[in-house]
Length: 316
Image 1 (cartoon, helix red, strand yellow):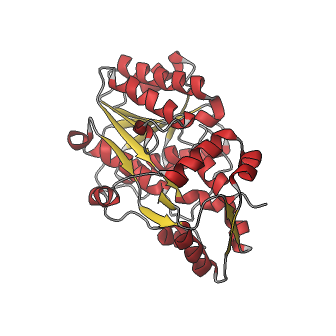
Image 2: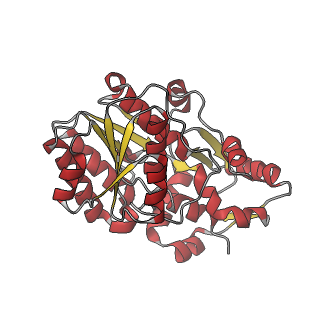
């Protein structure tokens, strides 16, 4: 059975510090701005989707980027090095490594991972980086959370992000919180199944799904660092587009050049396959769903990708 939507939304949060299996968009290397900047920004999770996008966006603006990685010799770390990122070894559980990584930096991009570490460890690791940023007197911390984390959803991997948000607010540090919805990029994991002509999930055809390209999450983080006076103290849910499941089926049919069949499965069958955590989240998406103000978001970054843009750039 093709578990397309469960995989798509699961992978929103599956962002390890080193991830050699993430989907790859056919994109050109960063083209640094002709105006260089002296500031250095530390990017955690630099070998993952969001961290990598942030690093590339900062490089495009002419900033210096230091990337935190548990394995600086991994293929993805070496790839980031080739793009101009200074890779340093560090671990959220090692305070000394965080202190060393933050030396001389202006700001830090923080990303944490529920799926790899679990609720308690994710929160602890997020707090460790916040504490290190406070010790280093960092002028700006940008944290990537999840959309609607502040809405008491009861979804554990939303609540863990919000607990880190609240910890950041309790500290004497300037911050920006970005809350992305699900990633357009995660459709790459299901490309083979979609091209074969099927989508399967428990969602109704009318269910509306907000999405964003990872590339644009990176650009928002770079924007926050670039315009600190406008962004410090802000928390913003970010989404590029919203589609019903029916619209998604139509888009994929057009992009693949052949009809895509949608198969809706019962929720109990879905839970048996994907587990309680995923079912709690997807039932929330079915009944409530993300609520980013897309018009407001696009007023900040007008040229965000649509799903069609993403699929075209990815060779669909």
